[in-house]
Amino acid sequence: MTCCKPVAASKRSHLMLSLLGALIGSSLLSAPAAAANFPITTEQRDTAGRVAQAGVPLSELSPNAPDSHTVKAGDTLWHISSLFLKSPWRWPELWGMNMEQIRNPHLIYPGQVLLLVKVDGRARLQLAQNLGGATASSNVRLSPQIRSSAVDKSPITSLPLHLIAPFLNEAVVFDSDALNQAPRIVAAQEGRVLLSRGDVAYVRGDLSQAREYRLFRQPKPLLDPGTREILGYEAGYLGTAEHTRAADEQKLPDGKTREVPATITITSIRQEVGVGDRLAPIPPREFTSYAPHSPDKPISGQLVSIYGEALTAGQNQIVALNRGARDGVERGHVLALWRAGRTVIDATDPKRPELKLPDERHGLLFVFRVFERVSYALILSVQEPVKPGDAFSQP
Image (cartoon, rainbow, N blue to C red):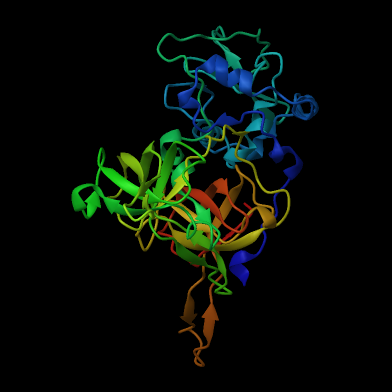
């Protein structure tokens, strides 16, 4: 089908860089701690050195690219990239890996001034404070400088964390047996049907793995739009609970024993919790350094579902994709959304033939969670609402 046809991407070798990677969940850490967790690898430095003097062709700049930009609290690498570039994931090339000025590209702070320098048909970003009246198109020589700000000392991130962070624990795909065999709520305090924060519930099953657990509703199958094959089971996230008392046994007068279920306390809720809901340990948060980048090989697929109950989705919503780790999908992949061309009748032809209009690219996805056969992605931009079955490809 034409909507999944790969789109050629020039100079893809440079697009794989993750030097300006951001930390999902970095708002939970201090800036120095975040920096310490993300050393620049030898491979990254080697690649940076190769493109340090290159930058990007002027043709790759956005038509309205500013001459300079002062980094503000709330900025993201994606936002800044989109100000200067047609393809925001080419940020590392635009920056030119200016190793003299930016020793640690993971730490870009509010208050720093980014200058777009254009020389010999190519453009690069540099840090600047006072240019003495020089313009961005002038051939200027800058000294390495960093402008500090007391307003916000936190480094900026790749994307708005508040859009993704909740889904790092909520958007979960299980195998068919995993959640069916998980501990389950069998009764509630005082016979309540629905539980909220602070309520007590009783659980049967093995709770020895952890003290804190996520609560899930019975999972629903995720079906491939094309083959109808089950790709996995998406469980509806309900909230969290703490294991407060272990299971026990009660001895009866006749010498037999009776099971006493374990006790949990509901610590947070997204939806009301009830009997039959399942528990899974809260995994450690994955602090992964990455930046938006294009896949290094052709990839195409379809949207499986919209996260939640919506029938269509727009910008900043979450969608599930029918491709995962086994298909080469990685965290940080940027993918293009395609709108299927309509079928129309050529009214200018007496025979009135039926025509299929070409598929049109109309948005971008950012992959942030990858399972074996399914991935979750954030809709970065879109012109029209998307729905399950819509196609995606490499950008």
